[in-house]
Structure formats: structure tokens, C-alpha cells
Image (cartoon, rainbow, N blue to C red; front, side, top):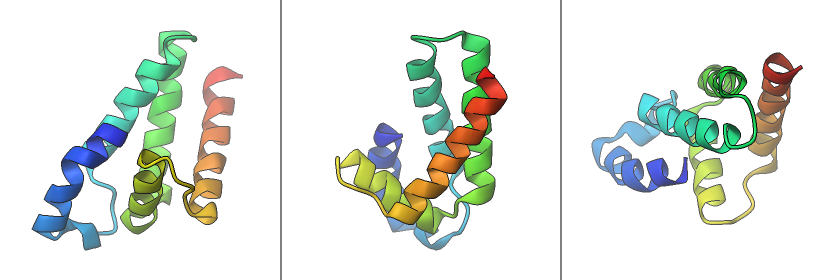
Length: 102
């Protein structure tokens, strides 16, 4: 996710996409790749694929770009993100852990 933000953020700002409400597919693809890479180092790849797909698809439906960008930017900078967005993401990951690993 961090690398995707650094590469795509300037593009979003210059093309006017930063005001859109959907998270760009490029960001979700990057999040999926990073999730799967980290997860599959310690867990079964097929379960990681299920988990990471769940997270990115649920992020697409439950987070707006306006929620996602400040959270992702803060996380990339090692700063604390907005507690409401972090709580929303925590709920998403909890649900997806149940679906994929239990």
C-alpha cells in the first residue's frame, strides 16, 4: 500500500481524481499484493488469497477515497491515522480473518 500511495498520489492530485469517492483499483491492487506477500510468509497461500481479497473488496465497498487517503498517507509516514478510519479498517480485517482462517 505504501509504495502505491507514493507512486499514484501525485497522479491523483494532478488529474483531479482525489475528489472521487471510490478507491482507485491501482491502490486496491497494491494493497492486495502487499497483503498477500506479507500473509503468505507465515500462512497458507490460498487462505491468504481469500483473506486479502476479502479485505480489498470490503475496503472498496465500505471505505471512500476520502477516508482511505488520509489513513494510508498517515500509515505510510508512520503517523497515527484517524481513529474512525482505523476502527473501520479493523472491523474489515476482523471479519476477513474469520472468513479466511477460521
